[in-house]
Amino acid sequence: MRAFVVSETNGHLSRELREVEPVRVDESDLKVKLEYSSVNFKDAMVAQAPSRVRRVSTLVGGVDAAGVVESSGDDLFAPGTRVAVHGGNLGVGRDGGFAEYIFAPRRYLSPLPPSISTRDAMVIGTAGFTAMASVLALEDRGLEPGALILVTGATGGVGSQAVTYLALRGYSPVASTGSPDGAEWLVNRGAVRVIGRADVSDRFDRMLGSELWDGAVDCVGGQTLHQLLRSMRYGTSVAASGILAGAELETTLYPFITRAVTLVGVDTVQANSASRQRVWRTLGELAPRIDFTSLIDRVIALEDLSLALDDVGAGRTRGRILVQLDL
Image (cartoon, rainbow, N blue to C red):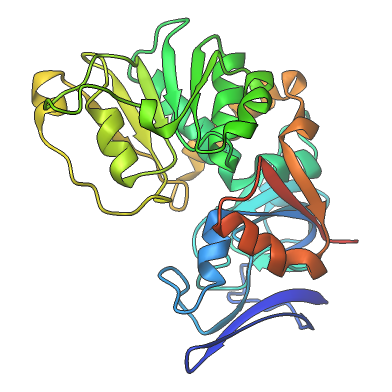
């Protein structure tokens, strides 16, 4: 089969399309014929040298994919079942979704709702799954209808889908971005307002800024997360999943002990079956109202992955890069 392989030897990085055989790691692994994958920021990190996230020297990249189960000894995933494949070590410590076939354990597979095609599942991808998990995390902590929710990194995969889902669920998303030319696109996704990175907070000479936001989905981290924490309203929450601006957080305790702000980490790698099913079920309920095509930056073939990885790593995308595996 054709696969996009990332390999590092003595600090030298190779990214190339090769003919390889799919590897069954365990006898219980299910074989999936893949139809689509997508390009995530994590994929870009895997394809760097040195890499902070890649755990082996050589592997097939791709942290997510979608297709049809081809062989299985599991009643829940009978042959012909349409699935999303994501999470765990896929594309990080074992072969991932930039290939025509994959062997994966049951816990990495999620049956797709009837309303979501394999193509749309990868428009959603890990980014959209993270976005919906973030929205659900905020709702679990008491969002009110019409709540003003800040979304940072809003032109990226997680951010753009968070804007879309928040709007569809009756909230008022405010999109923060460092790409001013994306403003109209974000408004079309459902943003009630588009602001720059410097407008996340105010009153920079004080420990806390004005109370501006009823909630936040942070896809950036670093200094951006610090600034939005100091501008949250009393008793609100921030769902954080991104490290684009850095993995370090330098902040104070004031938002937490003076305004009772909650910082919620959103992890989709080790999410259990119940959490996965809840997210995909909610996405399935929204799917008939989602314009998936508008969330796509472009559709590429495996041959185009190297450039796409560079674009995602540099933040030069608007929405999702979809990989069609039979092109």
